[in-house]
Image (cartoon, helix red, strand yellow):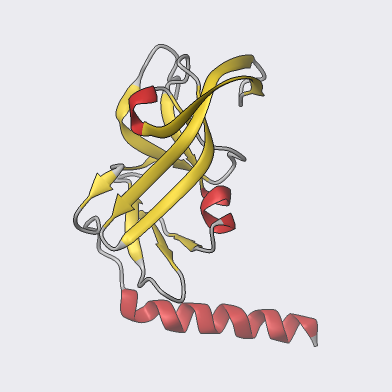
Length: 156
């Protein structure tokens, strides 16, 4: 899929491979500071960030602040690093349909979804409700328990 020339300003795109979050719309950042930072992007090109700021994501009961988010006007996406979300103390659960986050204080909340396997995981910056998706949250504990048991079995 070639996204060159396309701009997705309305939504956040969630990426497992991104090491830092990047937006193409400065208006969605708070605490904006001037900065000149060179960034290598997926296609090998180097772009220059004009400033940095805090990206606040609120979906349902989840509130996540990603400090030092880069403003790259040339970016096709408002790209959120799932690694940065994990660094903020959240667990990230990715299924074929959705991205959910949770921790000891927050129940699993869907923050992004996709319709087809070829689609990007996309979600809003602000939403009063968790996104809708056909996901079995009751089975989440079993899945995590089994994964933890598998890890223990491998270490024996």
